[in-house]
Image 1: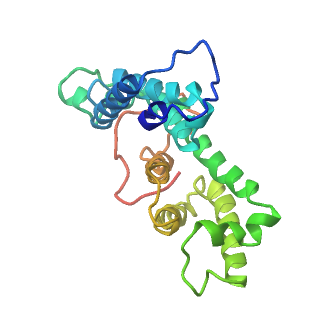
Image 2: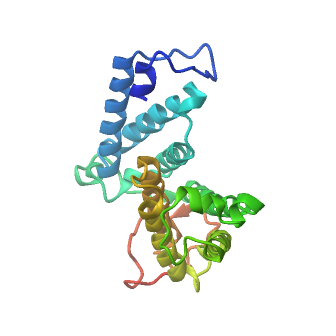
Length: 248
């Protein structure tokens, strides 16, 4: 973001002309504020305030200019905002340890929306790849560093089909108690392979996307047996199941 506003030769593609654009120093200040908010939100310090600031700074970047849009940042804004609505700092946070937050049940609908969002990402990512260009292996050949045994000929075609089938499978498997463990392991391997096999130096966006997606997997684990998925609230009694239980 700072480099974008520092380069005068770049052609802007503003989404809203009335939205003020920052100077290079202002952009740097926004980045610093966003990073501080991200750290505070992660450790649960002033969780709601930092969550709103984090979602706001990234959201401002997304709507400011089309050149700054990123699917990964869009997902991060959604997750941060929904976690604020879900009262993420009510437990396991500095706010809770310092006694700034009263223990209460957690609204279930924002958590459900995050689960649905994660599933939709995998589903539409898989469906979008159902085209001759991707299924022929051309995209993988250009943008990945697959091993030699896979990176040529029919190996690329097989790899492309496996990626499509896995993403569509993952969208539903996360919701199934019987398939959830396999989905967790597959998701970890999938996102790790994206980072390790995409180009010489993986982008920060891919790393953030993987971390956000994998962290959302925890919301599919039911730590409160007997609580209906349609219940408006989730009891604030973490880890009430046996260790390792991934039932729904």
